Image (cartoon, helix red, strand yellow):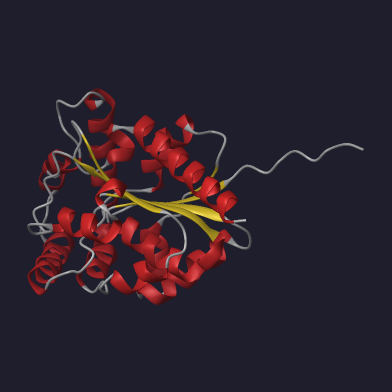
Length: 252
């Protein structure tokens, strides 16, 4: 009897503000044993009416039936958290890369509303390109490749990311969703993160929520870790899923 080839584990990868699904290209090359699903969140959000609940339902339809691991960067990580809560046992692991604060504060929300208005009406391409230094280190180990990748995405997608900016401004407190996630959860932050909107202490907040052992700071990186350290992201995802599989086996 001929054995059927084992299906590759599926990974849903969600980008953040100003990025595109190409954010995950280098990570998928580092982990070809996964089946990667990387939708365009900006396009999908506009299609479903710019509401988080509708976006989560649309993403549930994208992944279909069966188990799936989730990874997100920036607000994509927070969306992945909401989706993992909705998927229940089907979510096999959740890797958060530089997520937004778990409990957004009013000042942060207002900053993102102002930024959305600025991006939509006033920012030139040169001004948009200046943001590349916030997303990737210009002197980082992979800067020669990561900086042009970041700049290309910023110019091509920043204005179409306005709905994502507005989504961040209205994002719910994530503690409830985190309490409903049944999969293992880990977070990785760029050690040199320069997000001016998150406010102080948001990494410590995630440490308290997840446990310090589940939060890692990645040296010589900023915000777009899939560009700056795709190998480390792939390794973190493999480690997360291997740990989750071991925990499930022990529980049987």
